[in-house]
Figure 1: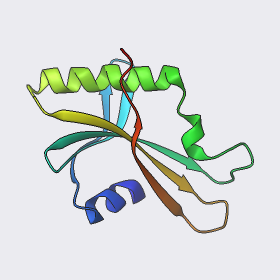
Figure 2: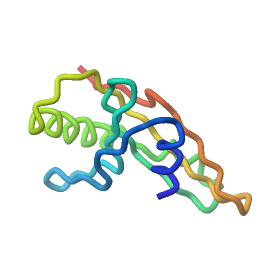
Figure 3: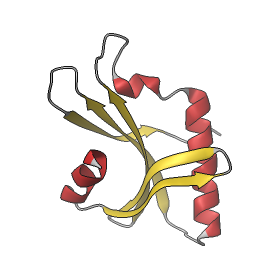
Figure 4: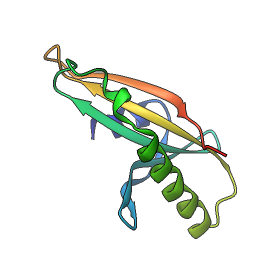
Length: 108
């Protein structure tokens, strides 16, 4: 919910939360300035193993991209798409939200 609230404060229109395609899931699907934004949310209570955004593997990126393609086709959406990450770090005792637009790109 923290990630959705953050996006709404930035003017994003939240369309879906926890949207599923087969076994794949997209945490947040939103629209912002006529761009479809597919958001992966990563949460960590400590960052001793690295930043939360470092935990979006290439395999996971491919799954998110595949699911996003199906969402766009199933809903007959012909808009630019991008893939963002929202990293929520609570290692300092407070929720620190970092939004990373264009965090990864579809691989050809």
